[in-house]
Image 1 (cartoon, helix red, strand yellow):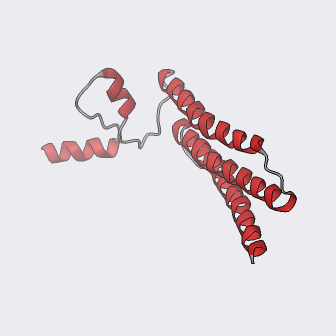
Image 2: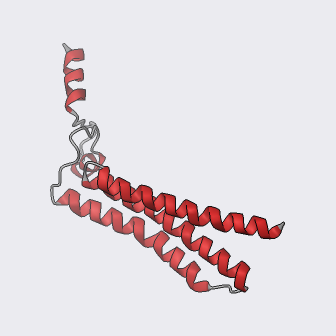
Length: 135
């Protein structure tokens, strides 16, 4: 019974990690701008790699009675560095004046750095709607 549970857990983790990694790859290819692509790359791939490494850890622990601390350190390293790296790259893209997708409604980073209290909406459809409501 425990063998079926462990094999199911290992299979779930490795297949789930593969799924999230494929979703991240599709997101990087299909999403419209740098910021969306970085979001897909950092969130989904981090979860995918962590799930695959946990599946690998459980496999070696169950099959070979080998507890490898290097896998835990690798999981911790990826968990900490991938989101931070995506954040740094997105901030540098913002400061290099890389424009967000044209349908982006709210640019909170621009609002926070300029000190403006009023929310700035950038989507043309929202601006047209706001003008028609004001008239």
